[in-house]
Length: 187
Image (tube, rainbow, N blue to C red; front, side, top):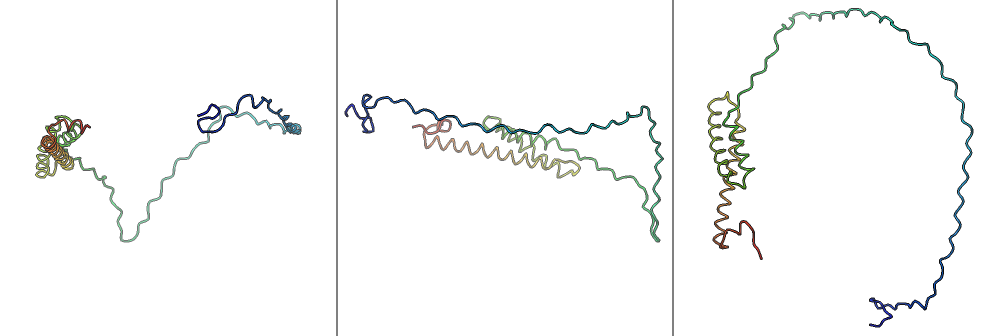
């Protein structure tokens, strides 16, 4: 490569071949338009003066409300008797076993990466079935939905634990060690 070409292969002009010439003179700035002349401010009429409010003025007296006329009675009908409003039914007590089942089922899923999964999931299944039996025998006790949710979460935790044990055993058999579970395939 010669000294008078750049990396793209194009010739580079030497500094002596082109003399310095000053940049062309700038054009004069354009004149701004003249400021428009606005008329003098308009005179508005003065604000009218209102009388001052009276102090301690007595309010106008109100008349007593007039009672409504009774509803007209049609022939052959009797007015409805004024009774007491219907009371709300008391809330059914919720089974403590159902609440325990739901809480331990949620704890088993949340802490699935620890040993708590085994204990919490088994507790959720057992207490959930006990709560379902209790709510089936006594309809005055509520919490059947919570018991069903606890049983489902408990069985899901047990299934996850069983699948992870089977996967661990299969990886130990086929890949020779359990670190495959923890660290993945390394190259």
